[in-house]
Image (cartoon, rainbow, N blue to C red; front, side, top):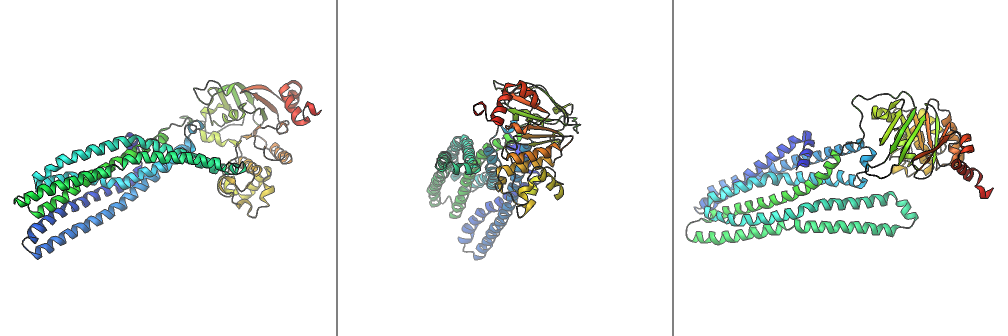
Length: 578
């Protein structure tokens, strides 16, 4: 309930709509409760005395009450819908904003498919709770209390039947809610798994087709789909029991009331109109109990979804700016002082261990190392995508933890190992680097990244649509666009994480020449090809998360066996080839 209360704080301006919706339900209920009393008078007075005028007057009064109940019901639906969907939109927005503040370590706790489910299905569950639950939540207690009071007022002896049947219904409904409550959490987790398989299959559809693994993916989907089906069946197998329980109790009560009420009519202790009105209150009381059970089922499912949403909103970002941050990065110098790092506190081994490295402002540094040597991990500490477990990372002479996160990351341009483009045009993607960049600056960055070679051949140039995730361009073209986007930031530190692996050697040489002309920018180049780093001011070789050697190309070629081996295999074809 705590999570649900917290989420209700996101109602904001829609509190008024929710309040008006609840008020309209009370008014509607009052009109409906008057109708059985009017009906009893119509039968017992108008019909029995054959007073046509009285019958017409009471009929008109009943019609007016029914019309007013209809109008208030329609108005309720309008206000409830506004409150539900407005509330849902604000919760989704709050979740998305929160995710944007997450560090990589926070994102590691949630699968992408789970976050999608929490922002869609779970929010929809909460919206349905307002849309379908507000009316019975307000109406049912009123109908129950007033219906019982009016039925005792009409005939206390017959009303005793409620004392027997209502608790039986309440016990059955309590059992249903108790049984179903924990199942809703499992249902949402099964939905997470389904979304994960769908997302993974669609994202990697080209690989699936290339390896002819369509049937395998279908089997994976069938497994999670059947798991969701089975979980849903188990959940709603108990959830639907409230309807037959309600019908059994209601018809039992009606039979008993007709049995005892008929006897009282024959004895002269009860009138036909009173029995008719009393039966109306029976239906209202039983319906109110039924609606209360539905509210509890809705509330139970809402609590499961509210807990999942609250997990996202209550997750504390691992990385935050200090209270009095440094707002500007003085220069592009980078210092790693005694750096050790592991991704999880409980991890047994460090990904990086005892790293000491000093990079001067404007220097060009190449980083080589085998797969898993923590090259990417090292450079991710510079823009503070992760915090070092031990030691200090300094940029511009200041600890990165002293900077405002936005200012620090604005000063660092990074081309990731996995190239990411977004739906939209080339222009829209490039302007991530600088939203105010005009066509001249955009083309200048594209020429430096050799992206102009293919953009000029496209009919729409910068306005070419890239499709979802840049599906309309090749891997090498993606890399060049990502490099151009990073250059538009005009950062003080440029990091290239194996970002020319998909381009040919000639194009890489042109890009390298363009980068060499950039002055006052510290350039860090992670590469697999020795030609990408051999002309840098400093080459660092990482091995198992430690710095194995550092020096210029000539120094390492003369003294370091690992560098000599890399050079021989790439530049001479290896010893076997002479």
